[in-house]
Length: 360
Image (cartoon, rainbow, N blue to C red; front, top):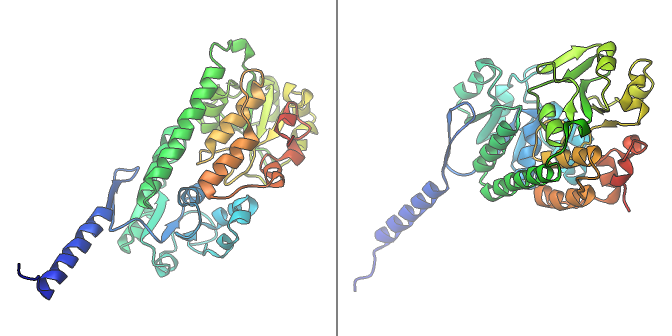
């Protein structure tokens, strides 16, 4: 049998390499219906939307692919546990925004990072997208705000960085957690659903989450009633309106770093609500990201709130879940002190039922 020539061998090798490259290529539709094409899973990603930075870290189990992020995403990492897990994240460039705020890209700075993928908001107009695409940067657009979109973001980003198995694990966890809560609260009478108010802002103004918000979604999932259900979306109100609603539970946002539960307890109007009198005011935890909005850690939010509202019906081992899922998401095992910090035991520890989250 004749031996293959060197040219034939080189041709076969080139064909094999081409087929392998084709097998690794990615073509997906982003959340605005645009096609995103990559020759291979993204190795160098710039992520402009603040929450999605931690999602990419969770999907990848580290920060190696992340070459640029929004400055507020960096501050969130430094405030949260990801800064302790991945101290090198502090060195990732964040000068990718034109100006001091907003999401208009600094295209020159982004291009200098040589990314093969840029992630940008898809709901804030073409002005923040066109500069990226006009510069020839492959750009995926995301939409944010509810559980369906959260799952779509996780799926899109996981596909683009070649982590489908991680996507399956996270989506499966969401399904399993929701099902357990729904089973535990089956046939729960409306009269046993406490009214819950989420305050997106409480320092410079009082801004509540009404119907149609993600906070409304998990308040209802966890067996509560949204005290601000008569309002649509996120709206400012005054203290007298909150007093009229008289919520049984008040949840304080995790975005205002200086906000403390004393804001409610010491207020002459809000301090008279059922929530304050019964010591049921809690600041939202902060883990890999803040637990208020949708993220890769949302099942922990649902478990935490369901445990607070219905400890007789729902019993999650929150500390154990944090350990298990931080190993899955980030490849890291938090210490007991770190779990205390995530759950804000120093601030929330005196609240009703909060001792259930303390280490045994």
